[in-house]
Length: 66
Image (cartoon, rainbow, N blue to C red; front, side):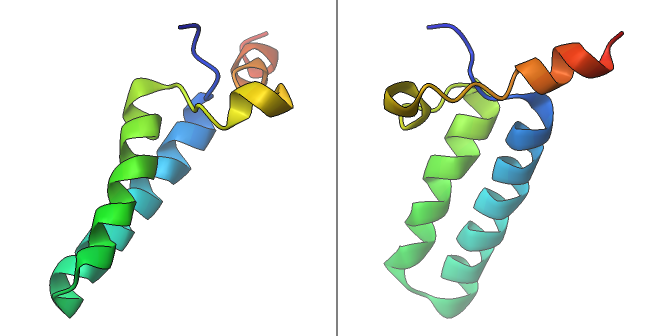
């Protein structure tokens, strides 16, 4: 699988995933498990939902490297 999540996108996903998981733990409910999805997609660098829409945010990383 070719990565389709850029570094900024991955950072936002990681922070939001952690925040949702923290909220779930502090509220003592199972909705905090929803935070696992953005956390894992941020860490892996691949989002399955981007595939049908043809979204690839890794191009932002290449543009700024120049």
